[in-house]
Image (spheres, rainbow, N blue to C red):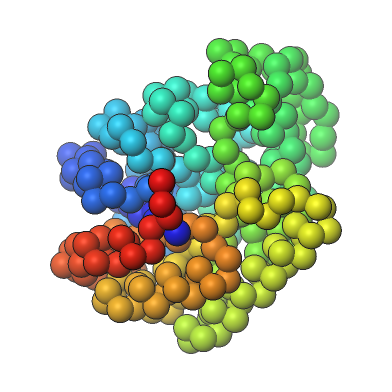
Length: 296
């Protein structure tokens, strides 16, 4: 198992910088921040941009993976996002993880988007296809329903080291059947938050159902599931994973049994959401992570 830590972009950089440094020092494998205009969980909170936050985080860390949690068509055009992705990957020395998803309702409404859900899903498929091409080719043309691109240059290089099989990893967030097939077809990894549920057991049933659909999609496409990473956001469950070390370890064990390779928790906050204490985070790092960590 590999472990990630999400740090909400609600803090000034003076307050956020030590958190990003500590995420690496604590031994987490990857760290993430939300890429929203406004997040519905904290609609009245101060909020900073994901891309400059990750660029700053890359400058003060050396090893940890850094990712968007997640970028979406709500506030990005694939061509513009490609430029930011290439810059973040360069600044981080190849540590960037591009998490993408359909996007939330609040951002869509704020940006004046009145597309029905079916069209937003169709737009996300087109967004992903074009973004994948931009990250693997130069001189890209496209004429789609939602996006156009005309002879887009992707210099300094659309892929790492000139290897077309080594582009920035796409971590595709998906719950529905169509999006899960897209994640298996075009992504390097799948991510899920499970969904909304009233109890932890109901939430785990949702997660298990999504995991089975991923298994089925991998089998249908003939893709090797052993090379396909699976990320679970533990903290969409009713119980915050860092409520106690025992709660975290229980969640990790259940994720492992469902085939997840990576789990993500959140830096504890003094108030909801993600209400918790630093003592629990430190105990998890000291006692739980070493028992479950994937060997290097």
